[in-house]
Length: 222
Image (cartoon, rainbow, N blue to C red; front, side):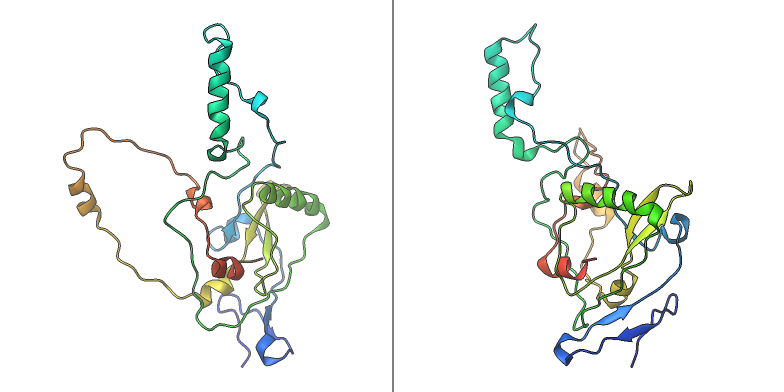
């Protein structure tokens, strides 16, 4: 039986290959705009290309009018020993989160290899720059996975800039939900009833530091 996408009714064809290597290829044409798919696509961040590697001499610490040369050198060396905990200027990831990993379970589903979408010539340079930035920041890496979801170039409202997304709708339809208990908000608040001081940290886009299992990396390849 030939499956189809329940959302758009796109045609799906089954590749002619040995049973153990069968793949399903899905193709959907047409241009998309950001407002049309903002709730359906996995949107990748816009990351500039990584800056050049820094040296210990580039670390700016202390105040020469207040601190001695020895104090500044000691601070600089202390920071340099902990440099693996630091990030670049908006183009690198913080250290990976501990004790948590993203996994995806698709049961016994066959590998899905969707066709590459056509990118208009005027957007190819922008797409190349976005990819270089993401590779430099280690948000994405090269992959040889048998799975492949298509990237989607979404045109922003100004008609010039683009947003890079990945169409995971077909993968989502195969993903099994992982059920686990969530704590109740009231229970969490009761545990904090005797606390005098609170600290609020902004974890905007913190999900980019959550590592994925090897299985999830393979399934989410594009």
